[in-house]
Length: 369
Image (cartoon, rainbow, N blue to C red):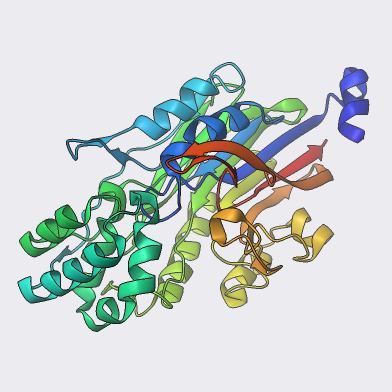
């Protein structure tokens, strides 16, 4: 209601700005129907009512020749060019440690995967393989596990051929999946890459005018997830995914401190932590003086990664709040809500169906000076 009122009385609300974080879930091989959801997700992002949008999981995509392309990124940028003329992203490459499967490990995994999952789409391969071949996968070496996980999205035979030959352990060719869309041209931009295993983690920074607030420091990030329930931690620098995430938070806080020069600091992204998930790590943001209006308003009653999401099984009422907009600002939060949480029609190989556009929902925050 307030947003409608402000649209009618622009002068009265000229000190407002709206920002959004959204994990678009274009994780081909891990989240179902990445290709099929792309057009609808791009259209939805273009239609967001905001001054800036921090997108995560706009990963690189392999084409039919197994070359890495920016197809997903290009689609999102092009579709949003009228709403958000400026796109900030950083191509990263992090092959990770060399990993491989022995021929014996690969043969056993390939035989099982082909038997149970030979006919499933690439987007469903990870779930199918873990469901039907999980015991064999868990019995393989950590290096083999991380190599297979890094190459999910390819046909089964290509994964095994690649991993027997030896491969880098970073998914999506080491790209970080971050994309920051803004209505105004950033005054400055920069980037930091965090130490990480399996998936490259980074943060983008842009000093940019947002709505009526004037210049603000926007930070867009995606921190390590705790995958220990499905994949042994493959790194050597840290002892676990949780320790890796903790180190990334240290570096993120330092990066923000070193680069924020305005009175409005806004840190957005899928933090893979919250008051209800790895709270000891999330508490570091509280300790550093950040506010989170969404969590204050909803107290985790509106999850952002939810079991009821059709891409996460579509049943139950469980979930966690791990997508955040954290602020240090002289502005006042006036409204926050969850967005992009409805299903839409998409067409899959099985025909027309209704699905959510991502396995995450978005968070929107409006600030008033």
